[in-house]
Amino acid sequence: MRTTLGICTRKARYATEEEAWAVVHGADIVLRPYRCALCRQYHLTSRTKGMRLRPPYRE
Image 1 (cartoon, helix red, strand yellow):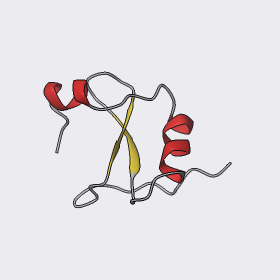
Image 2: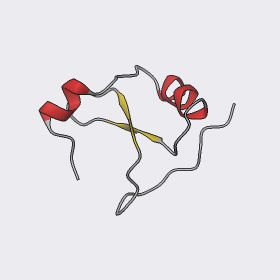
Image 3: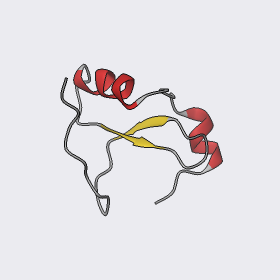
Image 4: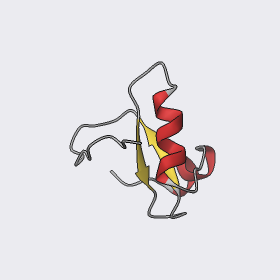
């Protein structure tokens, strides 16, 4: 599923994947970052169905 322009503009944007992972580690729910094809920045999602999952970012 691709992010639509309306969804992209409403979601928080993170310039780097590391910034997005920092937010994920502090969240109460399971989230993962992904790079948006529209804005080329990172958003967070809780969806995993049909997506290729990358290993979590390690510091």
